[in-house]
Image 1 (spheres, rainbow, N blue to C red):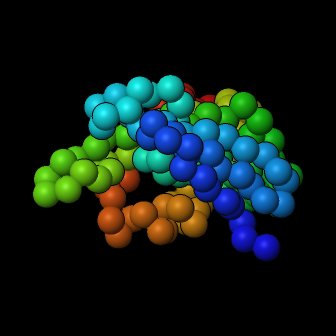
Image 2 (cartoon, helix red, strand yellow):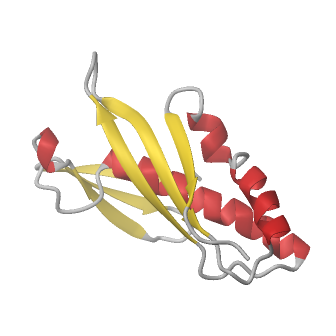
Length: 137
């Protein structure tokens, strides 16, 4: 079974279905690229994948260690380029970990974050900048 099925619905909108779960969502072209910005754009999903992958990857690590990182956040700023073609030029990540973690735990998670599959996939093509924005113990 294929992982995801995508359908073009017209008017620069698509529907994507996760075939195993049946969950679906719609995308729309952004306003600055002939769309109406009514939903996530395809490049927004790349940024979303990066943020959620980092949190999930750190979450797996914490689960294995018996640590709790509930409430951790990752905000992503997507910067688009246009020369010579439209592309994701840079993704800035603003990561905030809960204050229940120690400085040592946070240092380990900073290293772990750089090894999530999406970072490893995009790193050769897109500049990725990490900003750790919460105070630590």
